[in-house]
Length: 112
Ligand SMILES: [Zn+2]
Image 1 (cartoon, protein in one colour):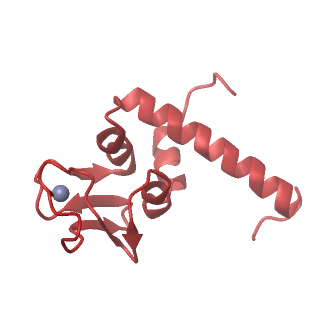
Image 2: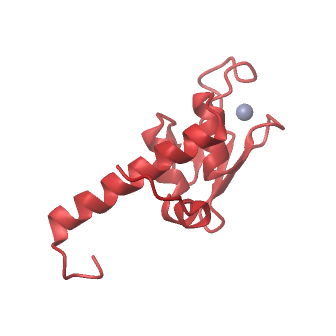
């Protein structure tokens, strides 16, 4: 836990959108996933409509005009959270990730 100011741009870059989507319970295959906006998608067996741009770390649904944005927007929209909540969650997730990496790779190694 840290109370220093969070670098949001850095956090966005460090949070790979497909990994985040998977952790949020979205079914992803390659860079396409099942949209979580169930009001627009009644049939769970329909072809996936949620597209992830891994280079830009963004997403959009080709059916729902409001389902799109950055990795932070993804967390907000999927979880129904506000932006601060989503940023806090991502920051915690990243700290956990760094901690795990240290555990497995030791402190000296820069690349995995
Ligand atoms: Zn959708």
